[in-house]
Image 1 (tube, rainbow, N blue to C red):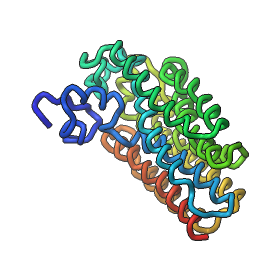
Image 2 (tube, rainbow, N blue to C red):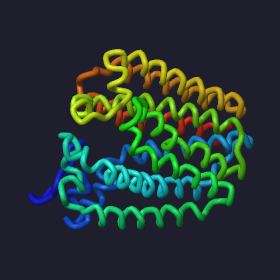
Image 3 (spheres, helix red, strand yellow):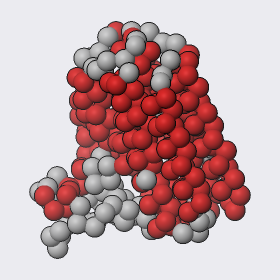
Image 4 (cartoon, one colour):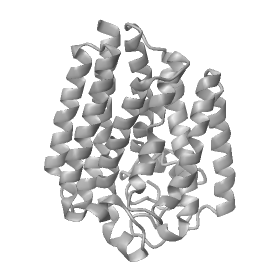
Length: 309
């Protein structure tokens, strides 16, 4: 990292954005959270769940790899757009929180006008990706934009902003199924519900990093709402996640391989709950990031189900 690079508190030290990108490009990469890939993983994985589940319901075989790649690109771009919008809306709050005051807008490295232009460019790229799918999927994916638009304001009005984030972040489960099937059914809805409960779990863990600052600036979260009872809530959320996903697998006719993935994911969830500490910010961040592995376990075993049986 050069002396004039600007490090973001919750990004890894000496990350590739700070090491490799020109200084002029770094604030925009940080607006997109390219230095923190966990977000696009959490947006991408439900898309793959829906895509792979659709293939299982057809009797297996290789899923559409072009669609899988488009979901990867779309997740990176649209997660970046969502983060840019969030930073525009939250710029005054972010400037008052230790973990976020170094972000590009509150630190003055990107103006609000520049951020809006960058947001528009990202949305155009996302539209180019979306137009590669069937008409039903285009309409379905577009419907999620309302949820994305209202999410940044939810921490001002409800103790459950993580629920709204879950509605937005897991919409890809419906889109992944629709891309492969051209329609919807109750199976991707079950995966979608499981993803919402999953987001409630991992984003509650994440929100425990900011509890003290959130109290001071007057914003709400499930972390503040649950307080010292969080571990019990996490257990309930992870249980509902696993039950919903496994029910979808049963109804889709998945084999024991997919159910093994749910079992391994359950072990991972149990590990998170056991390790969780309410007031340990560094641990909360590590546990939050580990949810990429939770989601990958389910995706990989579901893919193996497609390919082997």
